[in-house]
Structures are given as C-alpha cells and as structure tokens.
Image 1 (cartoon, rainbow, N blue to C red):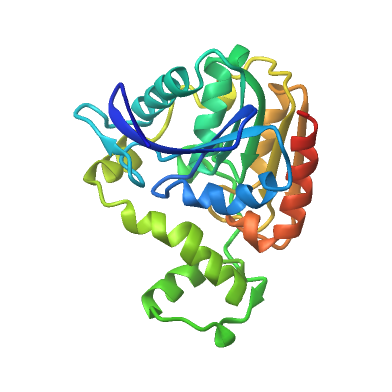
Image 2 (cartoon, rainbow, N blue to C red):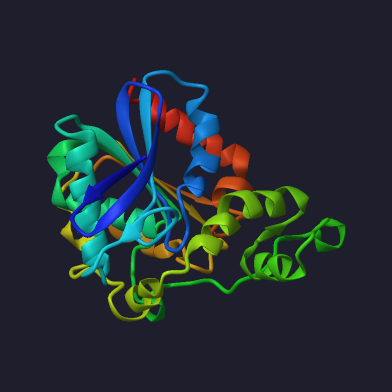
Length: 270
C-alpha cells in the first residue's frame, strides 16, 4: 500500500488487528529488516496491528521535491502517523536510524504513544562522536558459508560479528534487499549533510514514562552500546539490555535472546 504524505509517497504494510505498532527500519534499508525480526514474534501473540513502513527514498517509498534531511523524514513519519494510525495510541519500535526517529517521535508526540522499543539504536548522529568498539568477528565460520555473490559475502563479513550460514542467509533476506533498493541520490545528501536532528532526539525526550525497551550489542561497531545510557535520564520506565556476542544485527546474531526480551516486553501491553 502507498499513501501520500508531506514530502513523500510512503509504502507500507499492515498485518493483524489490535494495538497499533509502528516499526521503523534503519537508514538505506527497507521494512523487510523489521518484518524479519519482529513478525515471527508477533505471530505468537494476538492483539497487535503491525505497521511496517518504508522510509522516504528507501524501499518502495518515493521522495518528493524538497525532501533532503532527517528533519524532513521525521515530518513525513509524523504525517504518516496522523493519516494511517489517526487518533489511536501506538507503540513505536525503531532499529538503528529508525530508532533515532522513534526517539524523535516520542519526544514530539509522547501523548500519542504507548511505549518505545529500540533495537541497536542510533543515539549520536555524528559518527565521530560515538563511543564505538572496534569491529571484530566473534564467530567466524566463513569457510562453510555457501554463497552465490562473492561481493555480497565480503560486504557481509565487514558488517558481521557472528558469521555463519544462518546469519548470512538473514543478511541476504533482511538487509541486502533493502540496501539494493537504496539508489536515490538524496540519501547520500542526507547522510553526509543533513543526518543529524538538532537537538539530538534523546535530548528532547522529557521524562517519558511509558514502557521502554532498549537492546544494544557489546560488539556493535556501527552505533555502539555506551551511548544508549544517555536515554536513562530522560526515560523513567526504561530497561536497557546489553547483549554480548552480537553486532549491529543483534536480532539474528543473538536471536533467542532478542526474541525472549522482546516478547516479554510486548506481553506487558496485553
């Protein structure tokens, strides 16, 4: 499905009925990364209406003239919420850059939200200011990975912390598909020139008291894990879990831990 918003034509999919849950993917990906992570969990629950959305200029969503910043993307998301979710209160879940936007949503319209879920969230937009560990492989089973595209495998190994056949398969279905769709020139402009929201979203959150779950990885060399502690002073009902043995793909590198923690959090809304 598609809907026209302020500066984009946004592609989305709705599954199920009940409490609305808005799921926001990371930069240069599409909603498949969120479906791959969360739909197996929601299939075990009832009473949730999942709204998977492609951000402007990503996936199957198309930008309009004038969109050139994270501020514009946030404006499109809030317009999308108004048109698709309406007056209902909703849970918002964001991964990486989607987590950055999810923080901005609860900062902007906290009264419309029921809770906040963050998966390996971007906290500091400027990569030079992030507190990051060095990238390293914890499990390296590359010699036993069957692949068709050597370049895709090499890109996966630069990103992975757990490298085996299972995580490579998830990378191909959940991550690579979105990356291959991210061909709009405006994405480079946003990433290089207009990526940061000012102030940073975590700084704008004001004593948010809804159930909030933050999952970070100890070996995440993309956004790190230490910066997530900045959320603690502005979110009173907050659980932060730092998972060892995973990187920026926590949802499939430590899948069982991700599943258990997320399911327990979601059950609180029933």
